[in-house]
Image (cartoon, rainbow, N blue to C red; front, side):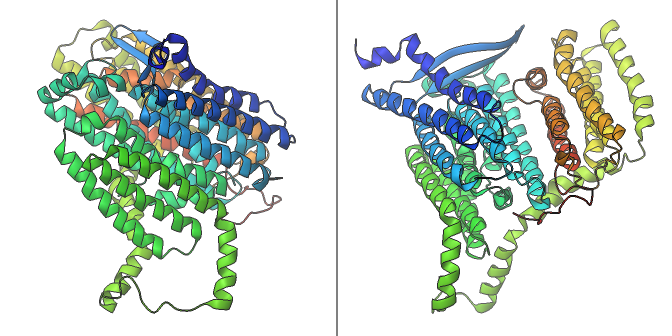
Length: 633
């Protein structure tokens, strides 16, 4: 029996599951390690990640010798109902091998480095818990065999990013920046959800990467018959990848993310997480390669991003932001390479950029100290500049606009967040009583109509549109609420309820689907409501106008609130997570307005949840007898 035949055997395929389960088991065990046991915690993390890396490296060497055969684990059915199936699929090819080995090696280094760098930090255990959970999510994403599995890991990376940026949770700026980064991540999440929704309609199944890469004629035939659907899938994939990899116009979040500890900055925003958009583009390349307009856009936007980021990097006053913009510039070139079709070159470029940025970030504290001394004793002004050929007025203008980071954050605010805030303020007249007196009876009436009355197709589509619109307006109201925490919390739940009832007017989305979807929402909202009531009973003044830092005194309540928020906004694999995917499966291909409003609702739900959690439990403590930390780390 040769090596190729061995890789086709079932027990070898189960090794892919082992690569995913090892970091998960390490994370679960780490939860039970005492905070004072720094050695135990760091050794557990090092052993877990090191073991997985060496097993993966050995597997990859044998796989390469065997001729690089594709290894695909058959679908693991998580939930099925009628035509709908949520399946976990794992896949191994050269993209997986490169991302897996680079990720395993760098996370192993970071774990060893962090053992000493974070010694005696108050959040030592919390850092390693989050790092192990991040690596589990990264492994799931890298080994994913379909978009559903990729989205599972993608979401874990999003929430762990938020937690590590806000690692210094007693400080104002890290917490604020963490919320900003998560809000951009939510845009990427919805881009991926919409791509999944349209791919279901295009291929009439949960398409696997194995089919995309190995059945070119079948894929091309479907794309030719539905050209615009394939084009829209490419657009949504592009949005998701650009948001995750900090490309134009989403570039401003990456320097903000550097407020976390240096090890997390290195592993997240220098090497692995920021390159996951590139991974998505490589996986979806069989769809993208036929869309010439999309590939041209990738090349043009890649070069524009590289130019803008390179100029911003030159004028930064701190080393971590300089490295962040340099990384953005290189990732822009990687996107351009994929647009040109140089996918192997993109993989090599990813590995080189990941190693370089990790090294730069890890030595950045020492470099800053050295450069300060060097400039103090040996400073000499450079006689020439790379842009000395430009007129002085142009050079000054370029300097100022690069210093302002090309006003990208302001552009994002004006185009996305300001209209949403305006929409929410229109409904400021809705108080707690109005919400329940107006909308609860409306829900009961709609449920009665949907269950007892047979409507024609046009009436059903109208009801879907009306209820999804009401859900969106309630989500916008929660997004802009500044005073009443409990009201903002319940508005998120009402948003989900109206969406579920609205989609139930489409065929096949039955009452059992509604109950399954809302079961996770209702448990989570009641759990979060219990936390809010508990804080009020203990005499705490709670509001959403500022950060109040209650995690100082109520760590368990903070943890429960975080779990409730994740359950409410569809964290894998909760009933809400599966329910959101189920909702999009039952949105018709011609109901693009409904899909847009549902996706926007899910963006607002996630941002509102993080905002409520951050304002209640993170940041400087509201009471004056606690010390006030510096604003920035």
